[in-house]
Amino acid sequence: MLHTNQKEKQEKICSNPNCKELGVYPAPKSRDRLREYLYFCINCIRDFNKSWNYFEGLNEQELEIEIRKSVTWDRPSWKFGTKNINYDFERAFNRFENKKNIKIKKVSNKKLEDALRLLGLNHDSNVKEVKKKYKFLAKKWHPDVQNENQSKNNKDKFIEITNAYKIILESLTKP
Image (cartoon, rainbow, N blue to C red; front, side):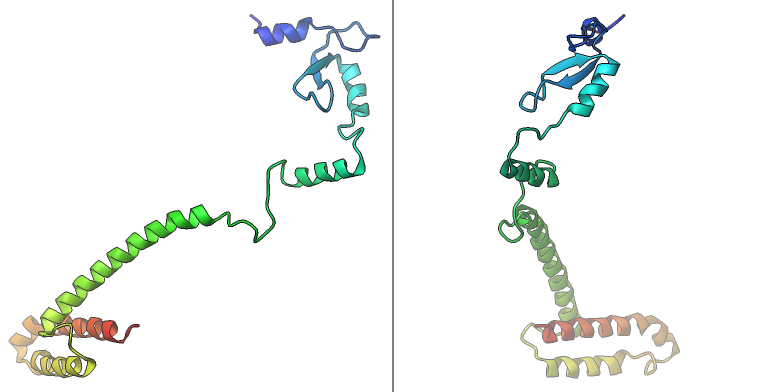
């Protein structure tokens, strides 16, 4: 069973007035009517294709415009620097970046709070006070100072104090 489109194509006679064969192959009627077709047989479509010139009748300026349009596949384009085409893209990702920064601040603030609490300091402490407190706690909890049984239990405590010290120093020295 043939579809309607196939029936139409098979029943058309070649658009060449000197030919009586079936016109199966479509060709545009003109440059201005590209979606309207003439139908040719195989021999006549070959001749049509050889003689078809899409740019026929254009002056030099119109031809130049067509060439420029074809460079960008007939899509609009702008000169570099005249339009920020990444504006929407950047704006969308800045929203994610801002949320990421808020989470990082919350996490780092939580870490800082925990570190300050562990060393027994507050937000007003300066570098000198932090170093003094760290030295005091490091001497107290260092595994070499502890006896063998205490050393195994308190080794983790010393590591926590050292990590807290690093976090606090980083927050004080980072701009």
